[in-house]
Every structure is written in structure tokens, then in C-alpha cells.
Length: 239
Image (cartoon, rainbow, N blue to C red; front, side):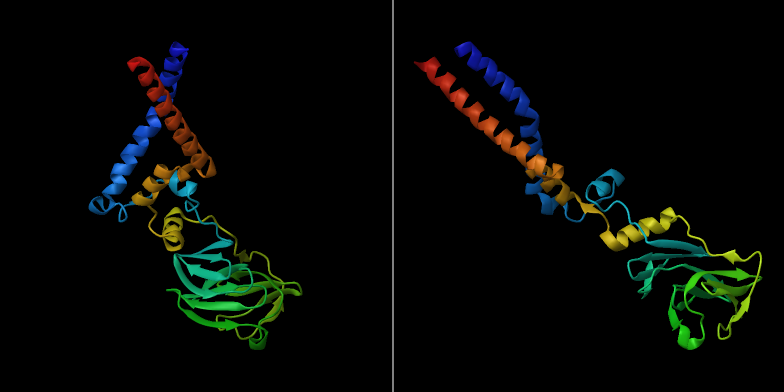
């Protein structure tokens, strides 16, 4: 019986040694968090950011218009990584007219400066044909496709005429450039995850979610059993 108890004691000790070392190291670091400025040091490893759900941003629409990256997140419109205005309807595309960015939803045209400053919205009241499906350029002139047909205007966008054209350069969705994606991640999620946050989650097991919490509970139970078996063997030895 005593031999079995010793074997069990050694097996449990080996099993929890790594966890005890991990708890000790993280505990020491957290105890000196202020001195080490762990709350100021941000970790930006892609796999870690992904684990915390901040590793990526998914735009509802992305369009590359010359030097500008236009994206939509919900109702918010961004030029590059700068929020500039809102749109209640999904973006369908955009064009650049004489350094003015023209974005289209199905009911309005949104005008921005080349730097992304809002100018105005133009809808049916301004003569823009309704039920827009796409926007493009034909030899530098703006063209919109609607359910009723194709319409062409000039750079003033105040007069539209039905037309039938071949070779229109329609605005098409594009992948998000990596540099802009990284800036948007910072905009939505900050600089990253602090080292203090990660160490605390490792220390309390929450780095693995609910499984990690239960795993630490198991380690605590094993430590208790290990202590009891150690005391039991010590008492048997001194008798």
C-alpha cells in the first residue's frame, strides 16, 4: 500500500510540476507588473490577436479609388483608416472626379474631398436617378447603372441623361490592402493586447477559456491530494 502511495505521489508531482512552475513565473511577473510596465507593453503577435478576437477586421465593402482605400463597416465609411461619414445603405462603388471622391449607395451619391472630408449627399431631390446598382466612368464622365437603365452625367453631377454605352469602367470591390488593414485593427482594437492581460489570463487559466479554468481547478485538486499523500507518508514514516 505504501509503495502504491509513493508511486501515485510521484506521478501526480510530475504531472503538476509544469503548471506550478507556470503559475509561479506568471505570479512573480504580475507581482512586479508596475515596475516592468507590463500594462504599457503591447503584444501584437497575429495568432495572439486572433485568439483574443482582435486579429482582423472585416469590412462590408472595400473599393480602391486611385490613392484612396474606401471601406464600410456597418454604417461607418472610412477613407484609408480614417472615419469620414456614415451611410445607412451598403456602398455599391465609387469613382474619382477631378479630385472629388463620389461614392454610391442605391439611393444617394456621397461626395468627399480627396482627403476624405465630407462635402454633401446627392439624392433624388438633386436629380440623381433612383435605384442605383453601380457607378463607373466612361472617358472620365460619371455613369450610373440603375434598374431603369444607364445614366450619364458630367463632373457637376446635376444633370443625368439616359444612355447606352459599351466599355464603362465599373467600380468593383477589392481586397483590403494589408497596410490599411493594420491601421484599421489599431483603430478598432487599439495597439494590441497588453502583456499584463495575457499573463493574468495565463495565471488564472482563462487564456484557454472555460477549459483553462477547469484545468486549474484540477491542478488545485491534485495539489491538495499531493499534500495529503505527502503528509500521510510522512506520518507513517515517523511512527
